[in-house]
Image (cartoon, rainbow, N blue to C red; front, top):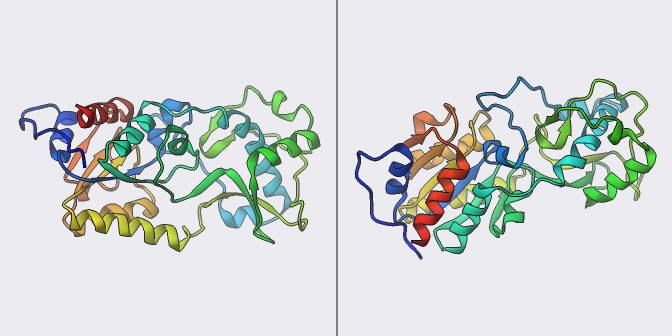
Length: 286
């Protein structure tokens, strides 16, 4: 394994303190929406983010009106989301993996940008927005296939809404979705849903177990958990920080603003993900 350089003096700046604390340790990264903001994807709870109310799974299941509203917004948003490119933070984490420093990424994001940047060992905790699942037959299909079908069923809709604000998770802020035609599963005629975990749904057990195992491996090997761009507001990510803390694992939280995990962190760094992770990757390759 390639080690990070020797620890830096305690009087250095916070980002340098993070490099020093993580020096020589195997790492696992836990990432959130703040990592993808430099790719043009807004986050939910950043310092300048407006209040947002994402659709819950119970609302999505409630009937045709809710699903029409969701898919209309998502149809417009996906046309933009699919063009998003990995930013320097994603590339830095991929470089850390290639250097043998980073074991895995546990991501709360659904944008697929870690894989696009070259990361190989990724736990997509909340699923992938580039896939669609049928709630009736469980068939999983590519999102681009559905996008093409929706474009045929709703000609000109996305273009007419080009000025709509982009929202997190690949949707857009639209008020008027009346008349939007929703596509059904081609196999069984069932209800289609993006292959992501909605608010109110449980993260699949195998992803949770894999994530816990990664954290517990850090305890065995004196490793570090690096949280990047997550406010840790929801328990799906916070639980791994709490487990790491309970096991005595070093926890470094890199985020703009305070997080719910700060009481469990060894060090909190209020800085941007792209520049700090790039510095970490450069140090690993020095």
